[in-house]
Image (cartoon, rainbow, N blue to C red; front, side, top):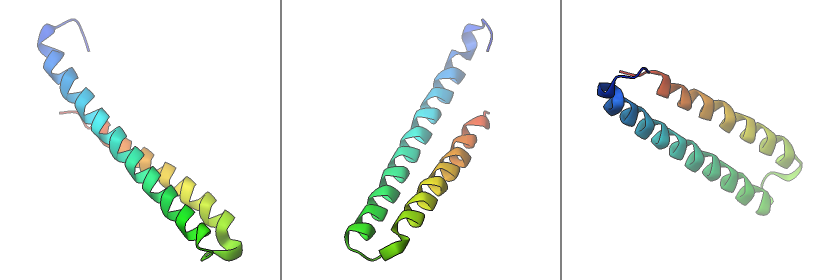
Length: 75
């Protein structure tokens, strides 16, 4: 960015896109965590509960980072 007022519209577009991506990441992370919690509570994972929870959490983090990288494509 620089001090040109004409770039305010672009900054607003970037901000809106960033907020939308952050909301997507939050919803996806919460959905995966709730899904794993339900599986653990139902006893369907047995002794695999901890590894599934860890890999699920790490997987969500990786996918969230990859999804957030879309914000770098500014037009």
